[in-house]
Length: 162
Image 1 (cartoon, rainbow, N blue to C red):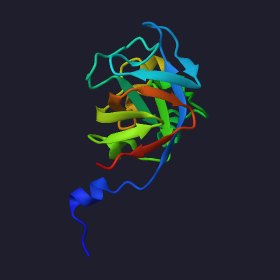
Image 2 (cartoon, helix red, strand yellow; image 1 turned 60 degrees about the horizontal axis):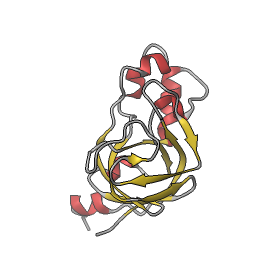
Image 3 (tube, rainbow, N blue to C red; image 1 turned 90 degrees about the horizontal axis):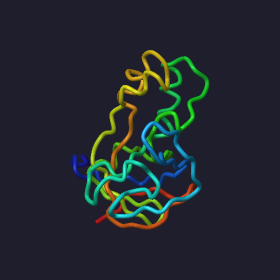
Image 4 (cartoon, one colour; image 1 turned 180 degrees about the vertical axis):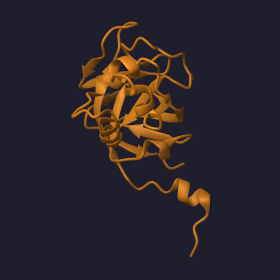
């Protein structure tokens, strides 16, 4: 029995976990690590400098924990901390790329995966020479807020079936 492509793309039985939350209060300021954060329709994560407008495609950025080992290997380092990569949410246990163009929940919040989150040139400083290229293909996902609420480290990350 052969599965159709749409059925394959919509089959995401894995449930992930929110492992880390970070917000940056101002330009060029370090990330603040949080245990929980309010997420609003207008600005995304409360306290984050980006504060994307309601419906913006990049209100929240997510990165896959499983990709850290690839980046660390390419850069020849033992450990990269989540705040170094400048994304808001670190997720494990579910493929973020499978959530692109889909609604998913984290705790009581609903997000829509809007696109890839490519690295920026700041990775050359944060990770060292070659950091930008080490991050290519591992930059994560951008999302917009569909339903506001609170998220906390340890919350489940799962596809919403419509």
